[in-house]
Length: 257
Ligand code: CAA
Image (cartoon, rainbow, N blue to C red; front, top):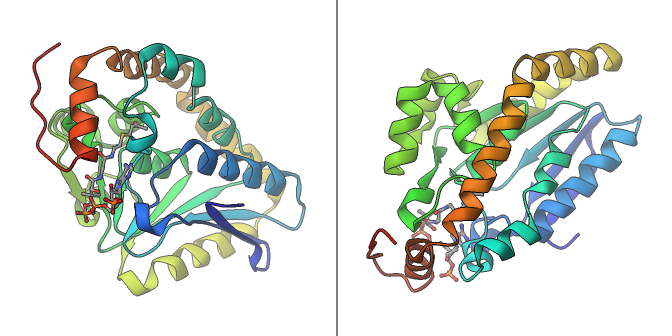
């Protein structure tokens, strides 16, 4: 594993995946997500693991999909690489996943946290879907999951402006389960995991499956629609300008083409 650290028994029955690209604020490149998928699939088959925690570090859970890896891709490249199909496998994980989030959870980072089943946030956590600022849109579930979590009006505001949501606001809108001081967020996630780990693993799995079923059919259609539109933005000059401006550390000039 190059981009994640995996501890099978972080506590008895509790596995930990730590995203580990600190210099890039844990930007989610294709390989990192494949490593996460592989780890989750192994934990699903491992009877010693009851609950999985995914975390980053104090500064960043993840600052989004890797812009540098995507900046120059065409819409067809994106369609063929189809990097978000890995995320479909991740969301099929049967065991419960808790995201322990501190610092930035932006773009794909926010979408990744929302793909998990519960979120424990540190007071410094910042959630957002800032893709609009780089000429594209969320592509890994943001338009669907954020809307379901915080409601249409707030999701519109966040996705159309790229504004961030503080941990307290995220709690107010029901996006996260609990907000705790920075030094406590992993501990709090472990406490939640321990409580779940004491339950029947069969009942936990069936309950998770049933809760997800409450919106999954609509979600499938919504995710497919969003993904196509995300890939389609790569046919625009504005996506190239937006992402290149980020890489070159300057303000983008959007032309509407
Ligand atoms: N992809 C690639 N590299 C990234 C990155 C990303 N998403 N986010 C940060 N980095 C890199 C920066 O380029 C920088 O690298 P260098 O030191 O080599 O220049 C390093 O991480 C540190 O970042 P900053 O210097 O920018 O740190 P900051 O504290 O000044 O700002 C930030 C932090 C506000 C999070 C800023 O980094 C930022 O705006 N990041 C991009 C956020 C974003 O737009 N995310 C959405 C990506 S697209 C997406 O996710 C699509 C999808 O739906 C899946």
